[in-house]
Length: 97
Image 1 (cartoon, rainbow, N blue to C red):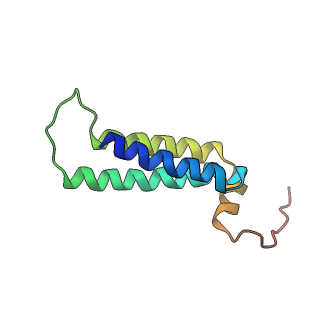
Image 2 (image 1 turned 180 degrees about the vertical axis):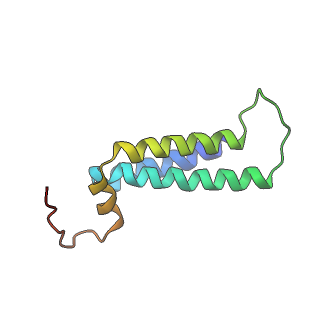
Image 3 (image 1 turned 30 degrees about the vertical axis):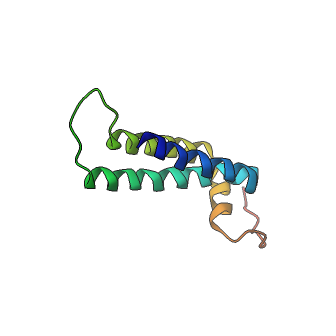
């Protein structure tokens, strides 16, 4: 399960690095990690595994994805997130200081 989530994180991250503009990578990565955290929570609710403190559970993965997604969102600037969510190439309004 850990390998599957690792691949689901690495492949889109590499694609985002190559396909998106540099200022859009952090917002896209943040959204990706929040979506993966949601999938990990759904999988953890559906799969009731053995409870052991020594193993990494899906709940741990969901928490890690959320933490890293929040860090990526904090490190990115609001203008970058707005640019990611709006239409690319369209006219942008100038912001006043």
